[in-house]
Image 1 (spheres, rainbow, N blue to C red):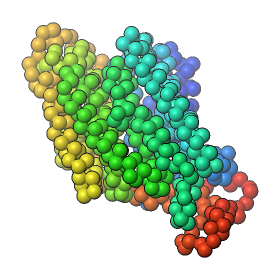
Image 2 (image 1 turned 30 degrees about the vertical axis):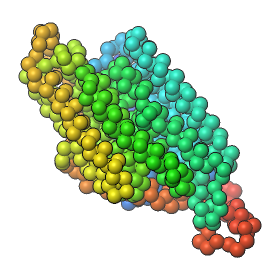
Image 3 (image 1 turned 45 degrees about the vertical axis):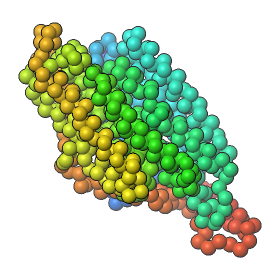
Image 4 (image 1 turned 90 degrees about the vertical axis):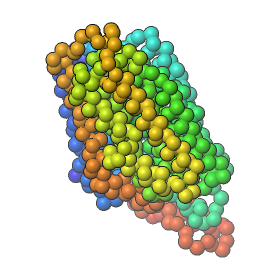
Length: 540
């Protein structure tokens, strides 16, 4: 396969979204198109991931323009793993929705909106410049606004208002930060900016004024998207109100896009340039502690399954921030492994919650009970996913947490202590759902709630089982996934391969020895490499 096929990862969901618009009243046809598109996306992502498993980077320049003028689409180990995981999550939640979403809601352009969201998310993972990252964010957010309100209930509309306003504010700040970036560096290409920063540092030149402030502004934007402390307050009520398959999709993808942006951009540009070593990195470490610990306390105190799972989305993000703070290749590999695990397992738990609601008519633990006798298979699926989230060895969450805590213990031991304290509290909240929902005897009126008809939940079980199987593979077959994650961690720590793949012969040569005269240094740094003005079709 060639690098040009990277663009298919965006075009397949976009084409499926456009195709399902006129099929809005043909539910079976829309579902078939959606399943085929998402299945192809997962298969293509996996095929490309195998090609870059040796640590290589695939790049295609849209329009044939050379970097940094082209719109780059970049596929490496990091973006590849997240593309595959997001495609699997999307496919499972999409199939699950056939059992849990009402047909009248499906006819409200659910299928085109779902595909549009996947188009935006895949573009976020693949794009190589800040402006197109902003555009991809907006595409995904526009689809998420509509999916959030798709039921049309009063509760949904009131919570969607908060979500929309906050994200619009964050998007406004994002586009302003992109403008500041262009003013400082004359480019929005991430690899080009990293190349300039690296070259200035090697030559002993000062970085542009406001470099650290720019990093702080971008960090605030991504903190809102990723639900870091203290920008997390919008998430629990938002995920609590939307249809369960939509909540599962959001929990698996949207916050992870924010974390991805921090992990991709900050080690490459701002931390490499020493931005905020004295205060920005420690601030992020404090945010990681608060995100992990305070969120899990909130989860333990709740009595509704949806709210517990929603708040746990925040708590798990704290581990990912911790790994970014540590900033070694080993820690970043742990972060990549943990992100992939969390995307799969968190979505799976939401899907289990959807089936629990079908059985009992509620997710309130004070009214649930007896589900173990009613549905043993669901109890097994939920238990595996819950213990994976906790990190019980050898399930999937164990390896990512172990690597992150081990990598950060020496320098950031106090953050590691919070990470260790958070794990038993996560176990407590999962056992609370298990004991109240499955183990305790059923109470009226739940005991008399009619069981779902035979075959009614078949699609729901298929989607949930898919994610449980993937979660088990991440645990018992962790070695090959870890090798790809280790490649991703090494590339994030040492981005030379990423920069060279994007910039090619236009990369500025790093000056090994300082020049004698300052004017010579400036001249050397601004010297453009000699390249042909012709448009290359593809670079790889």
